[in-house]
Every structure is written in structure tokens, then in C-alpha cells.
Image (cartoon, rainbow, N blue to C red; front, side, top):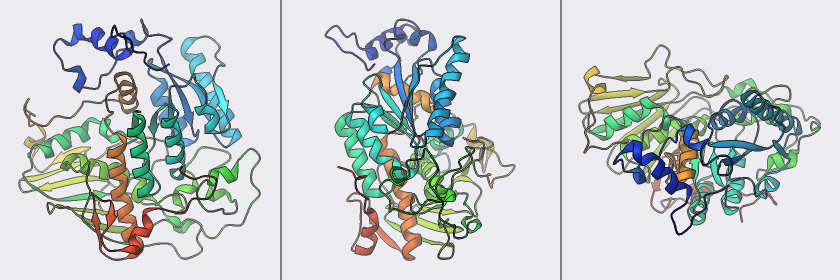
Length: 469
């Protein structure tokens, strides 16, 4: 259930502040999202004040990353799952029930299964939702969720188009809900450390940033034959706002396992790895340089695309250049090591995930044998961040940070506007790839300057009835 407030200050947030004050002394809890100890959650707050979660989208990223990331916290319990594929829905219901059975030592079969997200959102027992759907199904259920009074953890990228991202950010703020974007690199210590060092001038004035992104190989898929829609898949709804297209296995997802789905390689449903990984790395660029609420003013790019007729048609090898108002250049390419390299007047810092993978079949890193955090001079990395310098929230767990934000009603480490701005950079790069010329962007108005053709890419026609209201 959600926090209840009364005149005596008996809200969940106040309880947590009071409970932690004795141990934290004079820590300014109003400014620091908290990792809530399990003994607090399992004490006076359990079970009536536990956060009840519904999981929308039960494929690879949900099963291997998002649901395990939430169910390990005693502050929350997954009580419902939802998927348009009945086989995946039943499998997810069993997965969650089995987890709680093993954890408690008692038979658990209380997880509800919903065939559509509207029914799940109508469930008044559910406080918050995880949205782990394909990219084209992020914004519409997220808007519905915040309007229904639910808090949201949503996978990146933030949106299919820039206009959708702006719409969602506005709706989240209007509803006063918590929305965390699944840019989990912000909760990995090496990225926090790198960005703090950059923001505090340890490499001098930054002039260039190199962003290395992996790419897919869409050439592996030639034109595919139409196939019957598998039993149990609500295919028309799965296509959602995108144009109708005949079913074929490589357009959707595997039917016999949870390996990497074909939709990731189709421009109908996204932009390819420029958003798939770009949403992570451009977010780190924004964090390190203080660009979280702005964007570039000039964008140019070149990319290879598959031959016409390929089912998998997202970009291949590419290079892009983003120029910001202060003159900093952010250059992205698949030819660089997977990660972010900040280069300044006094040295450089490189940061990556190292050996971490969110799921078993994430693309392999190009940064083989590289360190997760490296610098031109080792002394840079050992530098101490002073009390009066810029210091970021210490989030060691991205899903846990979201749960804390729900409890405290403070913003999470990757709120929707921040996620929208990172996604915007990705989509600007994609537009430049497609139009094959330099584009001039106004990050305040969120429009291209004097360019009707480019501005036409800010939105896509939405197929009725899967439209934003």
C-alpha cells in the first residue's frame, strides 16, 4: 500500500526518518535517498506497508534483471505479472511463485497473472510497476500507470520518439509519481566515481568525450516469410502503436527460450544500439558534464544500414559527433572500446561496465582486458572528493534506489527528465544517421532549427487504438 499521512507525522517517510535518525546522527536525510535496512522494513512496516509490485512485460530483461532486482528487497513484493504472450505470462507467474516458496519455505501461489496492463493497473493492491516491455511499449503503459497513481521503474530508452519522452516526463511531474529509468550504470560505483572526478575538475577542462557502443549485425536476417501467429500471443496489441506487419518469428521474440529478441533489430520498434546502449552511455556523459537537463546544439552522423528488404534493418557501423553550447564535442562510434572516455586539458578518465552484464546474452564488450575505471595518471583516481565539492548520491543498487524513492518521495537517481534527455541525444544521433547531414538542435524548445524534415522525426504516427491521450 502507499504511504498514509496524518497530522501527527505518521507517514512512512517520517517513520523512516525517525527510525534512521538515531543511527545516522545529523545526516540530512531529506537530501540523501536512503538504503532502508531490511530489519526496518520487516519490523513495524511489514507487511501492510510493504510496496506491492506488478511486473509488466515478462521477457528476458524482466526475468534476468528487473524482477530479481526487486524481489531481493524485503521492502517490496511482486504480487502480479503481465504479458501479451500467455506462455511467458504463465512462466513468469511460476518463476515468482517459486522464488517466494523457496525464500519462505512455504508454498506460495499468490502471484496474479494479467493478460493486459490495463487490468493490472486497475488492481488497487498494486502500488508500483516495473515496465520491462519492448521500446515501443514503454511510454503508453507508463503514462497510464502514473495516472492510476502507481510509481514506475521503466527500462531504458525512455521513449520511442522525442515527443513521447517529453509527454511522459510532463505526465510524471503532473501526477507527482516516482519514475526511475533503468539506467543502472548510475548505481555502479565506477561510473559515480568517474563522473564526480570529471565534474570536480580532476582532468581539467573537458574538451572531448569518446563514447564506444556495441552494434548488432542486422545483415544476419534476410527477408523472412510470413508465419502464423503462435497460440497465446496477442500479436496486434504487441505491435501496439507501430504499423501493422505480418507475424514472423524474428520480428518478435523466441517462442522456446528467453534469448535476445529480434525486435531489437527492427527500426519499427526502436533505433538499434544507438538507443539500446546509447541511453546508458550518453546518460553518463550528461552526468559527468552536467548536461542532464540540456542537450547538444549541433549533431552530425554517418552509418551503414542493411540493404532494402532486410527484416532486421537497424544501423550497423556508425560514427556521430555532438557539439554542445560550451564547445565540448561528444563523439560516438562502434569502433571505440565499449565505455565512456572523458578527455580534458589535464588528462583523461575512461569508465565502463568491466565484466558486468545485465543479462546472460548482452553483447560482448569491445573493451577486452580493459579496466572498469582507468585514467591517464593513477593519482587522478585516488583523488579525494572534498566536503564542499560536487558529490553524487551513493546508490549501490538501482532497483533498491527506486524503492527508497517510493518510500521517501525523493527523486530517484535517474528520474524521468534525466532519462528523457539521455534518450533525446540517442534519437538526435539516429535522425542525423538517417538524414545524412548536420542538424541544429534547440535543447530548450526541443526542436530542430528551421528544418521541417528533421522536425517530422520528433514523433511517429500512432496506430489506433494504441495512442497517447
